[in-house]
Image (tube, rainbow, N blue to C red; front, side, top):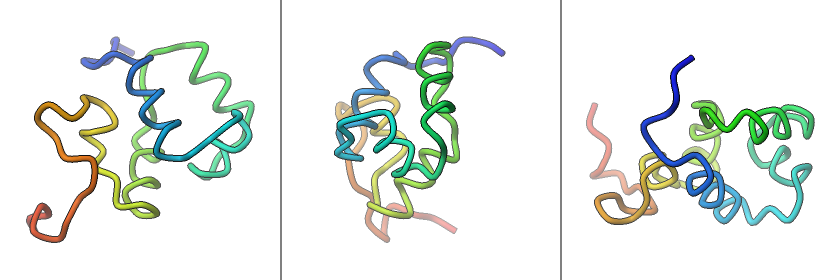
Length: 85
């Protein structure tokens, strides 16, 4: 698997921020996985799983692009008008 086109550490910090996670276990609960999976993803530092980004979109309306790339070009929260069908 190729390296991500975003800075993993920065994106991971944004994910932790929106989840309000204090531990890997609390992050795991927020993204519907287990702490060992979070630890594995963190150690590999390659990609944040798409299903974690989808979980934050569904639970908190957080824009996945904001998590990955930050706020320069992307809003933190999605609104209905941002979604095209």
